[in-house]
Image (tube, rainbow, N blue to C red; front, side, top):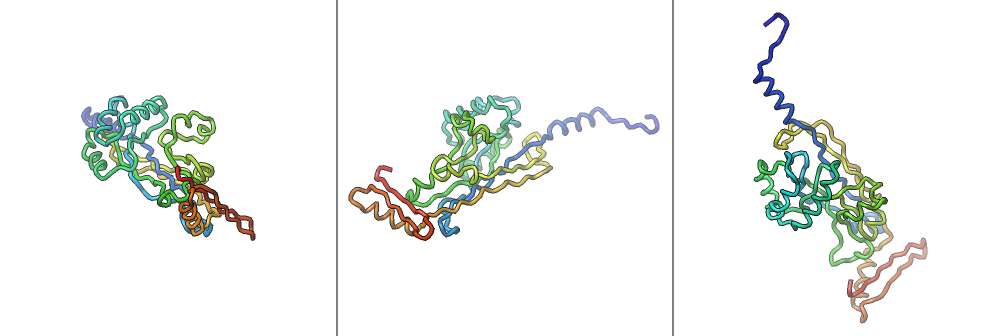
Length: 262
């Protein structure tokens, strides 16, 4: 070896090349907490969120395997409808920009244990925490609050949704106040930029961009009045009707309706 030069053996070079190849950068999304829908006191929650766990598939770790080959084994192991999973994979497969795919929402401890036990066989799977919407019991205010749900393939084709940067697996307001004020309630997801090894295990964290929580929505609904009104309609002979309560001081309207077939 000449003075001032460094010689690296072929085995050492191969070792470091393998490390460089196996370590990759991945963006792990951090779901934004959805804003609460509150009663007129600004404190009582009519709709809020609590954490659940989802099974997510990372396309980066497929290692050349096709998504279609995973439909049946994942459907059987995680008790997911195979047709729904197949449709979701087909939709995602044509859009390479999407790295993460929702496999199952609100999983059980048994599902989590299965994913952890099959880490070597399915390195593309991981478990993530996500907020889930909670509403009053017995369907109270369901007609006003509406509900949230995963965006559908049909909705993704509409320009009004495309322009918002939504993707398969995103949860949006589908009716009622959840839909009308979705843009404000939804917030903006954050992400973690991490380095993972060949098995998808996190080796280092490069950057974290925290999510922007959605805004809370304060309504003019008086919850105590709502309870009485819905009970009165329920006890009526026809179980149909409309009750409108107007505050003469400021014009606020608290409205409720009930139908026996809803």
